[in-house]
Amino acid sequence: MYIVKRNGKTNTEVGILVKERPAIPAPEYKYETVEIPGRDGSLYSEEGFVDDITIKITFVFACEPAKWQDLFRKARRWLLSKEDDQLVLGDMSGYYYKVKHTVIGSSEREVKQVGEFEVEFTCNGYQYLNKGRYEYDKDEVLYNPYSISHPIYYITGNGKCTLAVNGYDFTAEVGQNVTIDTDMMLAYRKDGRIMNTSVTGDYQELYLQEGDNTIEITEGFSIKVRPNWRCL
Image: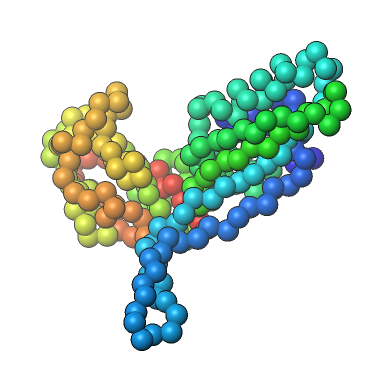
């Protein structure tokens, strides 16, 4: 039995089944095509960013005809909820996809008791590691054995702080705490207040590169890192 987990619940908890294991498309790098007169073919310049992928999963369920619509509504609530952005596939233990958009097709009845519908999940092309969602001391994330990652830095302290990653400086005026989210390109406090006007620097320079990295911070401040490790 194939298991899909979304919004903290599996398909079996909702009362539906997966018809067959989905085919997972391979991600592709975005690229620009350059035509040069007098040259055979084209040149392709990769941009270093990965296109989204679409994962299609067909679900089936069986119940009494009078309960058919209720179960389909329950399935839609499960799939369209915004409790998290994770899609976990049963044979990919330890990894998840980040869902950006979900489209549910119409439900077809094979017989009165059986329904079938297809769902399209538009996801970030990377596979994310579950262990990359936790907070670590900075020395624990200096080596990145995966693809370039977009970490979140949690800084506590008071005053002007400089965070240096791989030699690039990022400064912040910290009042007790600041969170620097390099994926969202936002700085904010734990209470949710946006702090972008209190920081200076390039979020992209704070990415964790493949292999060895350096992370330094002004003395008197403490830091935790959520590395958001990922791979293709």
